[in-house]
Image (tube, rainbow, N blue to C red; front, side, top):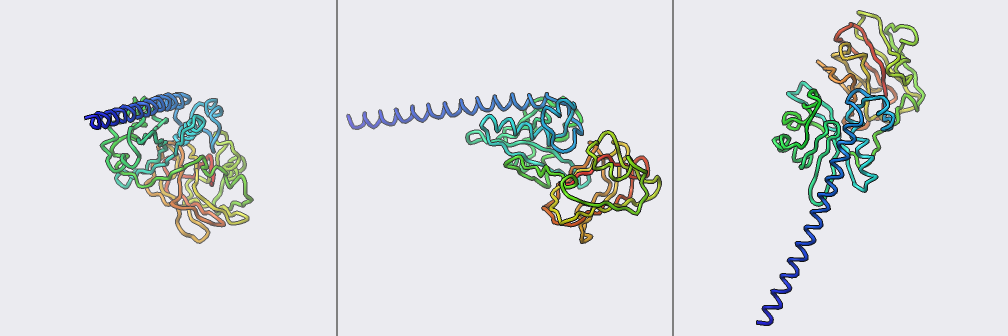
Length: 310
């Protein structure tokens, strides 16, 4: 009887101990989640969604400018979350809807306790699911938490978006390949096409003044082709192109490496956000990049504001 009583007492104490530990752990998760939700909304409300400054400006610079793209929202959220002691990871997502519309979006994933959460500071929402779960069970997208105020961005939170994810890049740190090779490496640029004189020649693409100048080719002459040749071979991870505006841009274009292999090819391209920020499937090493633009929306010529190679 005494032995039974002691055993029962031990079991009871252990149950209380583990129950108490679980409660404390659960409370910690809730506290951390509350902090991250507040951070998510703080970053979301800091500036409007838009093309933003080229490269990766500071949060203060973006706030001063007034708008920024999803990569900046995710970067600023991650920077602040790291300061708070969390271990966030940035994920760049590519969704091919009906194999026609290619959407790019950035989110942040954080593990709290044994649970995964996905935060989307661009939209001001979060999911109590992992990215893997959302991709394999798109219905979970309907369980997002928060209100999306910008109707044009709702497409990045739908079952259709999550169910057609074709690529995911994960960043455990903030190494976004931020060094623009056109600013750090010697290169020459050549073209058989006629461009207007400075400041509207091809060099306008690299002056860092994305909203002041632009490069403009001769009207009605297609295709428009130019080649950037670096002094030494470089490693390329992504290419950023700032279009003139949403009504004037190329619909069909191809980018080649120094072996004339296609590294990016776009047919029936839709300019939804004012720029192309295209990650390659893998890092390539090349001495040159050739850009060929064949069909255009709006003016029948090439109009570009910015070109950066990372």
